[in-house]
Length: 136
Image (cartoon, rainbow, N blue to C red; front, side):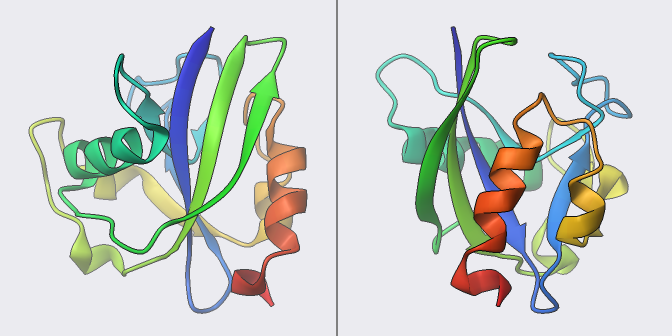
């Protein structure tokens, strides 16, 4: 099983930040767009993994994340620990050793995001996100 942590960055105008994983060659499970995050390493908590991944991918230290729920895709044998955080704005991110992710991220409405290929977990995740105070 692949275990990962991901964050749903939500903007002030109620949009969600997604990463074009296919464009960056990081489409491990056939997804086109996805939340930002990555693998939980051995002896690492889901929150520690999220903080490490955000720092590695965005050059940004996430401080205000809130745990939402765990999601499992039987098809991909994938467990995702989902967190939510306010989108700090594109200027908070910087180029890292892994490249400049700013070139492959975009804000979507939840309605737009629900139409995107995201490991079969998208509909459930976006449905749950739609119920959050962040998006009201």
